[in-house]
Length: 319
Image 1 (cartoon, one colour):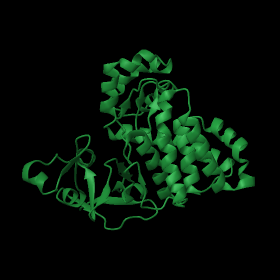
Image 2 (cartoon, one colour; image 1 turned 30 degrees about the horizontal axis):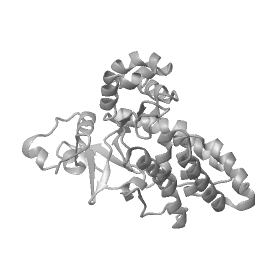
Image 3 (cartoon, helix red, strand yellow; image 1 turned 180 degrees about the vertical axis):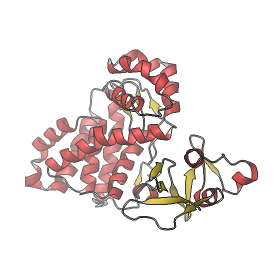
Image 4 (cartoon, helix red, strand yellow; image 1 turned 120 degrees about the vertical axis):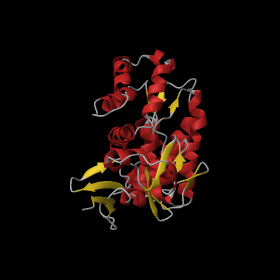
C-alpha cells in the first residue's frame, strides 16, 4: 500500500496537471471553450457539468464556520441543476475565488477530493491488480480527468489482462492507449492534454515506479515538503487543531499568521514586532511567520519533539 509520502506525490503530480502547482491552487477557476465540464474550480478542478462542483460547495456550506456560505448557499439549487449560465456569473466566481483562500475551504477540498476521486481510484487500481505507486497515480489521474473505465477496457483489448502481461507492462500500455485516445478525441480541447501521458511515460522510462524524488513534471519540481506528511499544530491540553498550514522551511517552522493568532487569542503583530517574526507574503496574499518567536512571546511553549506517527507539533500555555 502507498505511504503517505507516495500518496501526496501522486496527488502533487495531478495538481500540476490541473493548476500548474504541486500544492494545487484551491482558488483556481477555469472556463475553457469547448470543455464539456464547463466551469471548473479548486485544487483538482471539479466541474459544474459533472455535478461535483455542487457536491463540493454543499460540503463547504454545511461546514460550521464557512465564511462564504451565506453567499454561496443561494447558488446550490442552480449548481445541482447544472445551470450552465453559471459559467458567466461574475458574483459566483468572486465568491469562489475568495473562498479558495480560506483555510476551511482548503480543508473541505482536500477531504472532498480524497473521498470522491482518490479513494475510488485506489480501490479501482487494487481491484484491477495495480499496487505500485506510479500505477495508482495513473489511475487517479484518469479518475480526475475522466474515462478510466473506457480506456481500461480498450487497454485490455490492446494489451491483454494485467494477470497475463504484468502490472508494469499493462500500465505502460494503458498510458500509450490513453495518449492515443486523447490525441484523437473528437472533443478538441482534450487533444492538447496528451502532456499528462507524456509525463507518466517519462516516469515509466525512468523506472520510477515508487515515485521517489526528485520528480519534475512539466518543468515543475515536486518539492520534498509536498511529499512529506503535513505538519499539524495542536494546543494542549484541549487538543484543538489549528489550521495554519505549518511547514518546515530552512529548519524553522513557518505558519500562516492570522489563523494562528485567532486560535491563540493574541493580537496580530505589527511594526517591529512583526518584522522580528521574519514575515513573508505568499500567494494569495497570506502572511507566513516563524512559529517559535510568535508563540513564545505570547506565553506559549513550543514543545521541541515532533510526534513521528502523526506529525504534530504541540503548543502548551506557560504557567
